Length: 86
Length: 198
Image (cartoon, rainbow over all chains, first blue to last red):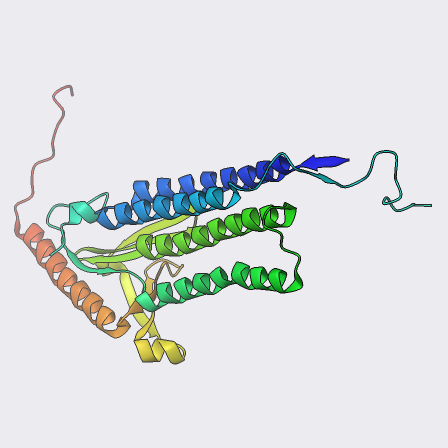
């Protein structure tokens, strides 16, 4: 059984998606309740800036990795690595 | 004097803000320090993996390390941002008529309560611990006429000065309230309004 590297990238994007849903809730709260909102605007700007910066650094670091590579967990026809339950 | 309409959703005519209090900055500073200490964790793991000779930048270990660290940093940043949000949105407002408690309990729950100044019964200051004494912060508990203690000003700077300002404002409000009542008693009673349809 082989897993392509893009699978791990998929897991990463699920994590990032969850992160963004929670972030949007954050920002919604800030918009809804913070009055006199200069501080709120600065906070939101900083929030998006840092989030995008982290993702940009991630993209920069993985750009040289060949994502079409595969990792083999079990070789075809060889089940030795699965523990025998009996 | 702060403009009430900029700070509150339901300002009343003639009302003005006496105190607008956030938590002490040292509480936010402690959260920032916690987050900063978490930032070094992937760096320590990186050096550990390098020393073990198992980290290969072009391989699976490199990819997993980068993606894992990225997710870790995103969630640390979210934690830090929540602390900033908590500091920014937790606010206690004392006006010349009432006290308002606005508290962000967690991301999805929020508590807003308010009480007229004349409904206050007693005020207690609790300043516990070394840091609270050094940085002069503490909790102010305000007992209201209801059975449940609704107002706790948490970790606010200079709690004794705050108590002084609240009791002063409450006293002024009571005097104003009594004067208004006296004025009403002296006024001639208005005839009852009778509907045109009756």
